[in-house]
Length: 392
Image 1 (cartoon, rainbow, N blue to C red):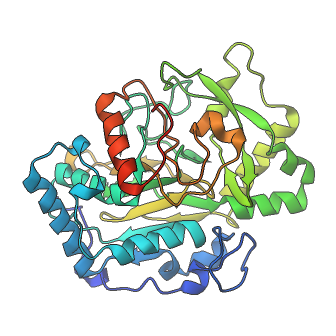
Image 2 (image 1 turned 180 degrees about the vertical axis):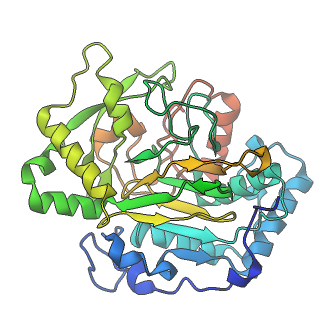
């Protein structure tokens, strides 16, 4: 367990730079008040302003998490039969409010530092993480096995294949978004080298494309086809159409996974992207990977990165792992539907199944979304007062 967790000397650092964290609006540096949507940012604005996006847990918050974990363990319920009410974490109101503020009105992301995992087994870390994620919203299924928590580690997968996914490889990943309002990553172990997280603000990228290439900007608002990579449920087609950029009620959303777009045309009747759409994606890829837009960070054990998928694209560098199994790079991934999510365009209904604000939506239903997972979703949605109208 030597790699789990961070030392106590960092627990009391501040989440202090509110000039960045609460700028409001969708334009760069749009004033000093809280706005209805996350703000646009470029890397130079945030790279040296870590206090604006790293929220260090206090000792009281750490103790509250461990107390809630103990309550869950004492109850003896299986994890899938629990939701937020089964994890009575103390002293977390301010932390949960800070997360909501950061992802909904601030920079669109936050890193929670100092989760108390250093003395816990992986099984207990998973339970703690499950409980914390459930206080943020409703967990959504990931992948063919409909996992509600995913393990991000190298299992020898092939990213560049018709069924390839990035989470089970050590490959460098394209910039992309996940199929949920929030994606959370909890670092348990780091790699021997590499594996840095990279993110970029899709609002800022949108603004750049709009100002320099209006024709390509318009192309990104047109439908394009995505493969479901063989992870569709029995009720879903193996592909769907959705725009990369969309808006509703003044709220912007970027839905982009080029590795899924790349293989959609292999299905009968599915067209390839046209020349303008391809050029637009090429420009989008260049911009997000450039020094102007990319923010690179190292996630240490005990760090939890939380991204608003609608406004933040993410990637990862390739990595070399340790030989010892217990030291290998390992993160836990969550996809979370939140009660404070924004409305989505009706053009995203095939992807998210429900586009209403604050509804249970998104995820990759997969092949194993069974009665127990459906019952979990119902209970978690009831706890948060969220509409649950979709079949999975």
